[in-house]
Length: 350
Ligand code: SF4
Image (cartoon, rainbow, N blue to C red; front, top):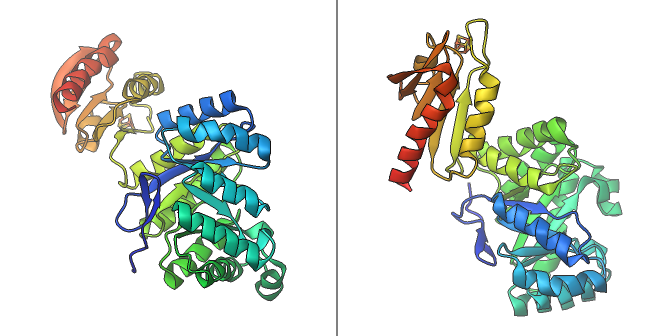
């Protein structure tokens, strides 16, 4: 598999041998500086590496003038039709702009924009969506994986015509199969880094499942350099889910909790214990595996790969490490005793 080009989005590198980065997009009114900055801060707090904002008019632009200075994460401007707005965002200090060359009028407009982006070192993401393919491509291919891929390559060719190669591509669709096929095709056909996402994937559990399957299956095959989980609602959840996907695939070192589904052998309230352990580990950035298991009979053995774990029992539970029982504790003290051990381990390894 060809290594992808490196594209620098401020301090975050997309492509090459860089780690897969997490993106999300604010959904406050961009012109509302306070609300948008507060959402940017929340996203930064949950590990969002790159943050995108829709920029639709001069009011948005005025707010962005301050936001690009305040934000710690690099900001990306999402532009629909106005190349001058995209150019202004590049001048303002946005670290990337996202638009479709087909949406911003003549090739001459595209040329002028590439000149501005080149001068400022602003990369461009060409974001093709299944629902908005250009007419000729849709007529020829329909809303298929081939159509998505062809559209992205046509747009990229237009930028290349003007000597612009600082490009990231995405080919999103709400159909997981079409979307993943499009990314696989595109991955074969170009060396531009790929921004993965299943668009309009829905909300809550349904959206999380769709995104995890789509993004996860591509990442497992080494495809994709940056990801955005699209979920209706607060974007903070998008970044949290994206980080969980990376953690589950071993692409991000993070704290992982493994827990059993419970069965009739379980004599403790395991989901309550899970919640407490999860809260305890929320801000721990160490690679650590913690097990929350329902019974002493199977727990320590089943979770022998865990650095630390608890296994519930009748009145008494055990705390174990790598399959070895360290101590027996009363059920009321399970979480407190585990916390003591984890705190010690964390302070030794931080
Ligand atoms: S670890 Fe114990 S309680 Fe949990 S599912 Fe297995 S047998 Fe049941």
